Structures are given as C-alpha cells and as structure tokens.
Length: 223
Image (cartoon, rainbow, N blue to C red):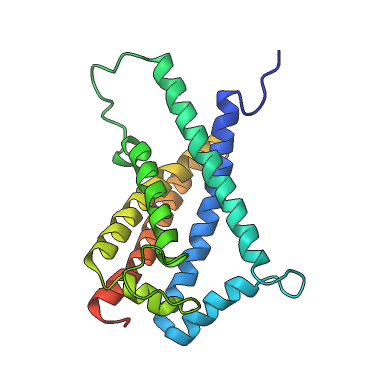
C-alpha cells in the first residue's frame, strides 16, 4: 500500500521544509517593513495602511492581508504538526536516551524544539499586542502602528519578550534553512559551504533587523 505524502517521514520533512521557507520569506518581508519605522511615523503608518489596501482595486480592502494571514497560519500549523509528529516518531524509534550526547550537534540543532515553542507563544503574544490590542501596554490606537510599536517597546517586558523571541528565531532560521535545503535536495558537496554561509547570514541579518527596532525605542532613536 502506497503511503501518502503526509503519512511518510520524507513527506513530513518535505512539508516542514516548504512551510518553513514560506515563513522565512514572510520574515524577510516583515523585517524590511519594520525598518520603515526609522523613517518616521508618517512613513511607517503609510506602510501599515498599504498592508490593508494591497491588491486593490482587484481585491477588496484587507483581502490581500487576509490571504497572507491564511497562508501563514496554514504554514505555521503544518510546520508545527509535522515537527511534533516527527519528534514523536523519532522517540518511538529510539525510546532509550543516548548515553553520550553528540558533541557535533550545534546549539541551534539542540534547541530547535524549544525554539519552536518559544516562537509559537511569541506569535500569540505579538498578535494580541499589536494586531488586536488585547494585551497592549498603552492605549491601543487602530491605524497608528508607529505609536503602538513605541508603546510596546517602552516597557521592559515588551523588550525582553521580543528580543528573546528574535534570538530564538535566529537560531531556528540558522538550522531550519540548512535542514530545508538538505530535505529538498539542494545541498551537495560543492554547495554545502555556500548554504551554511547563507543560513548564518540570514539568521544574523534577520535577528539584527528585528532587534534594532526595540533597541532604537529604548535608546530614544525612535520615539
């Protein structure tokens, strides 16, 4: 009996790789958009408005944004469920723990699981903070994302949550990009060094780009 893509280990790894690359593409675009905050409230608020009008007049107001959200939610769910099921499958295959830990395993590799949990919790907090305003520290202002961001990063806990999550994201991207390349058959003896360098570069650039926003608010560069 032929096993489906979802049932097989290779299929689950492929789904993880593709969904991870979709989320990586979003992270790059999101970071570039976030950096518009350095050009002032007018520019940043216009960017926030554009997110809701992109695709017009073909699409109605906010339809483009909702399409992106649906795709991202699907990618996150498929990525998380696949990761959990692969982890359980690995545990069942090797119920006894290793006597000696593998010294060659990188810190990013060893923390992928907890990094995923941290990022899942962060996404929930981030949405409740800057999308719905449910847990926002100040008076949430619909249509004024610049002020909402400044409010969030004017609190110590907002900065701690965000920076810790972005460090976890960097480690996740570093190992995840490399793993996705291997799963999809992109890597080989000649490309591996380039792929590892690209994985490291993506992790550093994304982490620095995202962290620069709370640091700018904390130092008064953005206010």
